[in-house]
Length: 456
Ligand code: TYD
Ligand code: MG
Image 1 (cartoon, helix red, strand yellow):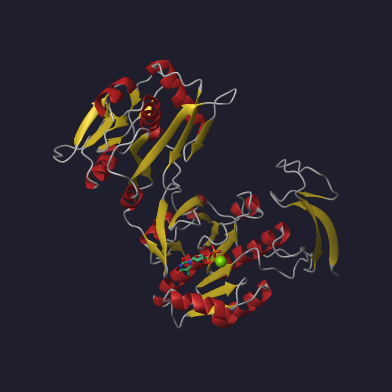
Image 2: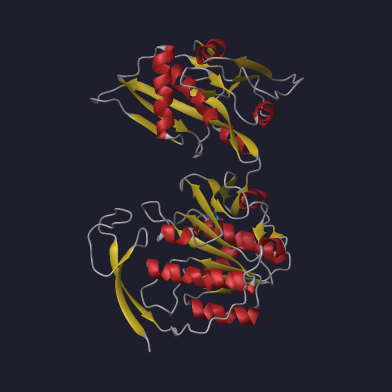
């Protein structure tokens, strides 16, 4: 007989309790607990256990090479770790309207053109809406099935009929399973549906792509619940009012998580950007401006040139403001402390804003020197030469420390026409015999300022 259970579930982290409490004891969010009724209709008789996965010695396990299928986009493939792994469960998350459905429909078109069957479950849109978009994107294939359905059991029935290689769920917040009665989009439903989809991926060897909307607070509804269950979590980010989009892996069981993929949203869908440095440099004026510096960041397997901007102005607050976008806040505080102590800049009465252009997040210390020069030049109203790229980590003593993959960064700078690269004195493996770019090695922060900063 069906068992009905009432519980309160935190919509932020999935914490469950039997009675209402105002603040979630797990994640500390106020008012996030919602009453959910769960009606478990499945038989709970588990006395007979069929063990088709026996225990074995690690030496006896044979490694089977996982099959990877290309998405048709180099940028997407790289973020996934060279393509989609067959039988894996991928979560693509992002703000509503950012272009998730567009990306997946275009990918689906490519996958199907290679002879794979794919079911696209559009739980939010009608079949004709999807068809209209497919027409705009020029996606057409005899292997692409569109199913406007919100019930997961109905989808499962179709799996036996169509026998697809891929299944896309757009979106996880709009599908539901009849196993439990709570409404679609609730943490319980999302968790249960993802469980079922995981089962489909592993047992039927179908590659499942789940699309998930990010809520206003920046979480995929039921975030923690979803992220640990799936194999790969990819975020699709960008400013809705600009055309540039970034793909970023947050978790990947089959590849690294420090790769990014860059796309441009144009009239007929997304086009990949194979040389993002060029894109990030496009909006830059040729004249050097105080507070603007180009750094060479390392994003996974490639180097990326990005602009760091700083604004320093006298404060009207009792304690000055420090605001960072794209740079870790504590890192910024540390750089300001070094500038005050080692260079003698008195920033205690100045607000400091630092921004990385293009929505890129820089979390490596190699950007330190660039950030420091951006702040220092804005404060003193001088400029870093516009043909100069800055690379280096700053120690608390003001010395410039070595960074990884220096060669890759310098080659990227040369490719984009930069004439000077400021690098740490102790850099190993510097590229030899480059005629178009001058490599200047600096031991301390003060020396970097001397070689590349000039009056406006
Ligand atoms: P969509 O894929 O529906 O977003 P999501 O699934 O993440 O909610 O994309 C919606 C936006 O993309 C919409 O505002 C219009 C824009 N867009 C284009 O600019 N060009 C296109 O070819 C398409 C299909 C969408
Ligand atoms: Mg959509």
